[in-house]
Image (cartoon, rainbow, N blue to C red):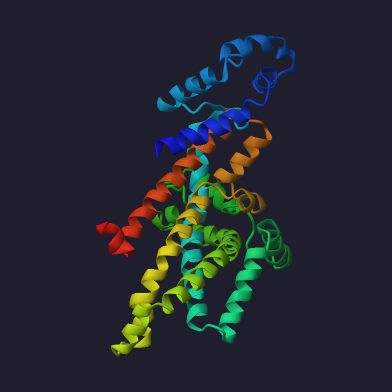
Length: 330
């Protein structure tokens, strides 16, 4: 786990070194009249030192909980991550389970109904979902529902709900507005937060479930053609029992990996979706930071994303052992 994270940070840090010290130092200057101090800034932050010295100095700060200062939003990088993560987590909380459940169910159905109208329909749905650019789908959904029908507006909350949350009368426990609304027993804010989740969650589900459908279908067909399925049928087991208790369990092994990666991708920020729907999560913030050449923010985001994927792979390995006892015994 640690070597992977170090490798990610070294790669990102090396890319940031493509900018010369003067360009990086200029990011700290807000007043043009202070441009004459650029040499002092370079010396102060050691921007002219060898790359490996700069990297180990940054790594030492990270180990002490200091990810640096985000110039783009004027706050510590760690605070920026903690501020924007709840929005991303709330989006993933609804999008990931729906993607996994719907994608897996449709893939299983397509395999069981192979070469029927149901199979052809689900395969067409998978092709369409796989082919659609997420930004185009998001814009189309906004144009139809918000622009045309006046419902499901972008952002996380309506203006009145946001004012209520910021007023102090609404206690923020988690930063996930749907959860906090339940804890505050505020049904109006809950409905408002859910309505703002409809379009971004729909976009993520349509785009991501296509891959799960195809993998589940292929894996399920492979299991249905194996001898243990034929033997189970020969012993008199019902077809539904064979599918649900035997074939599906084994087919899920291939799906678990993709599900873990999809979830990790959502938790580490969905740049396009968050930008289109003005859902100001980690992906939205990271994209903004990158356009501002906010190097500490980009490095902090890369470290966070790497940690998310490492943890996701660890969880996937644990699930492997649960699904397939042979892995656990091995």
